[in-house]
Image (cartoon, rainbow, N blue to C red; front, side, top):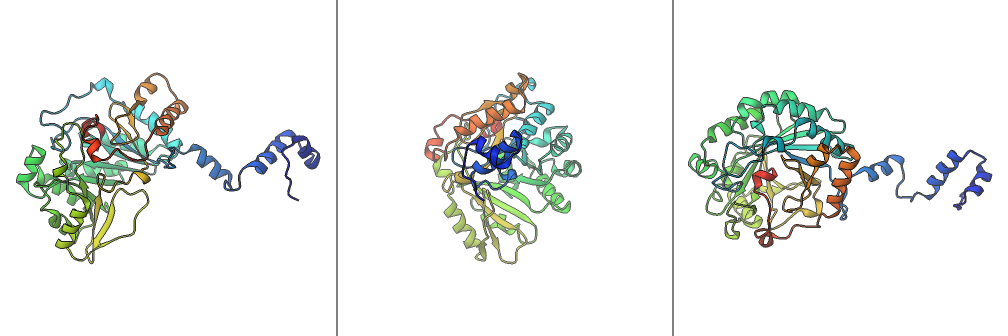
Length: 372
């Protein structure tokens, strides 16, 4: 018999059970059919969603504002004013924030900077974050300079994946771009990552017209025998990086050059929430990705939150709006209050960024102070 009543007294007469059971029955009757299990109801209530239906399960954490390179697209030549040590998140504060977010469905972390390997306690941080209930993956983006020296210990601590930022394979260009030497050390770090079983090792390559756009074929050739995922990234505007639209190499042009150099390049099926569209040369061990934030943005599937080294939450890489979770934690806020602040920020997250011409004139941090 199917009951269609919202009257408690009627239910009581029918079921002859106590009030607690009645309320349970009432909930079962009035919950919409699409929420067909208790687990799905809890999941829907707990998840960090915005007004556009995007669920956020991925947190990128900047561990430091310091870096041992001075890459032109990341910071001004004169450097940037750094926050005082006391302004940065402590490891315990980081644990409190990540613990709250993990309880709401965040299960993937990426450690960035600045340069995260400059943290002497990096292995302890990885081990601590990996132990938080709900966290299934901790990865890192690094410039690779000290990777050969530190990676083995980071792997033992629980590091699951590695991205290496590398914009050229030519020593003179590397020194010009990074304003430092070190290409051989980065390549040694890549080799070690492969030897330790990281699969794939991702390489992030920012393409700039007139600088490294003639190396597209060389980077793809790196995937012939090695399980690398080379990802070509469009040059993006941030404070102090001298961005000009004429230096941007758009996705279509990159793909055309890639297929000219490697005619066997073919597309692969898309991965959920991936920023890169993946391609592969037939018979090659690795893959090639294209991240087209400017000309073919992926805002509709964005699942990312960002936490700066000084504890500010950014819900969009290109948005200036920030909320201080550090101040909330230091003021005694618990998980519920932290999640309230995060959800309020997500409530204002836009459907898409403002477009590259508008972004070039908007206020934002330098990339190094956001976290790569």
